[in-house]
Image (cartoon, rainbow, N blue to C red):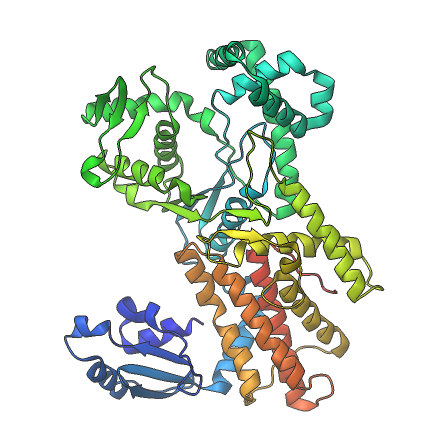
Length: 555
């Protein structure tokens, strides 16, 4: 049950206040609170008067036991027995589907994320777009939406002419086949280090040959592409990332002209220094460049074609672009141009911006070869996880498998825990700590709960009419927040809400674990605490799963 919506429905103000109902800063004030200040404009009364009137009209029941109006706030106390019965029984019944809903039934969400460049390895800068997009894919799917994950490959541009030129000059098939993506990247870096004007001209010619359908040039390009996809799919499998489409920039080559024609028909194209633009100065933005003076298309041209294709193909409810905040202007321009073209669905395009990720020694440049490969970060995290786990529990079975789950979880959680717009400096020691706000802490708590359940050896049964104490109630109240947290994470495109929820729940459970006996208790107390442990174990696994992280049964 979503208690915020339940309260709003009882107040008959669902449309205007459900999202404002929150947890008060002090639990002694109540379990939920509604600030009435925003309602003052709606009802044309003071917040204090609104709170009093809402209180007087509210009828308590088996779920809400008490309502108080205090200085413009309406505070609600939940019936502890009713809440515990409702929440725990719902989790035990739902299992891994806890927090799921059908709110997205009949709606499609397209998510454009990761968008790797052909012939370039994954570096740590790709981490955020990949795991944020992957988490949003799972979150929207959990809420009943049809989700289309799109990897908008960077497979178009003069860099591929440079790569063919470099391969022709320095490469051989056996070395590239064996070396894969790193061999290709080495050629690309060498070209940028050694190219002169003649080689630059050759690179432009090779790219022209690709565009014109030349057999040899396109066979080389497709070979480089297949080597790249073989490489990245292994990383996607490790990170539990799913895609439904790998339609990249090149896919839209023959889909740009209709968009350009429509811009002309609607008198939106203007000539500026030989280039064709859409003037966005009246909207506080520089012009959107559609065609260069030589007639070449640009990112904007292809993104306009891609958006149009996706609407026609998927009829999306929302189309999300998980791309770094440095591209804010680009997407503002694209969305505005589509709006000017009269596309009513332009409002459904969302730029999910995020901050940059780097290690403590700084950022990366593929062109100069100074990069930190994501596969190396993953390997180092798994290696360190193995060492930490061995130190904690040297007799643990399947340490290799558990270390991989823990290490991968640390990489993902490290990029998801903070608000997505923040820049992140990745620290191995921090993300692999068994204490603090880490996936390792959540996974260890999950394993702790599982250990209790295994040792009990009894069937989980929730006793009726059990009155939980304050420590138990804090766990129950936190468990009750999960469905709303999942909804909020989707609504705000913010997976960090689930990551933070998981840490909060783990902290509440560990306090309960330390302060309350479980296995040595008897009767209803033991039964309730085991049911609470099972419910926590389930909610923690659900939380981690939505982030793409596994939960080892032992650690």
